[in-house]
Length: 163
Image 1 (spheres, rainbow, N blue to C red):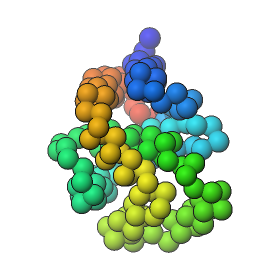
Image 2: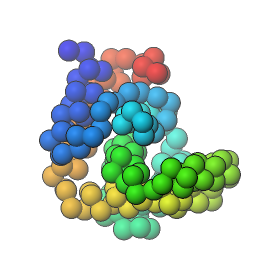
Image 3: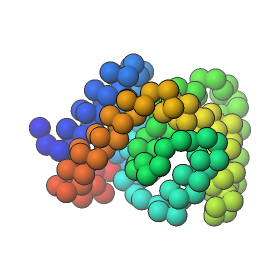
Image 4: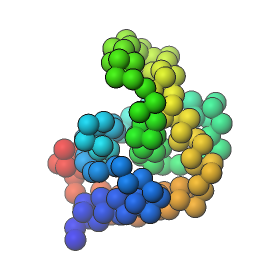
């Protein structure tokens, strides 16, 4: 098995072991995302250091209790949070929120902070914070997968070739 398949396999195994059976697939994309119809988490390969710093600051303000967590782990858990919370919103509400997101993304830090407080984004963020606080062993297991399998994959392939 190559490092790409190993990484995806380890993540899928982790998802199953943690009871997240409704995530059906993982794929790579420029940015992290959750695809509702396919129940698929897109694993982002592009890094945005400044945005990552703001995201950690945002999570800290809402009670995230860990330090020095790799940004991709936080992004993955955020998308998993969408998987766990998205069905609390009607299709109409999600459409309205998608429309509102168009007006926050280009405004720097202030725009990102506003984006992360939109109802569906805030639900995913609060889920991330609550879940990590209550599932520390599983959280550290996910961090381990990223630190070993992701790093091995990055050493072997250009991740931009995966999208």
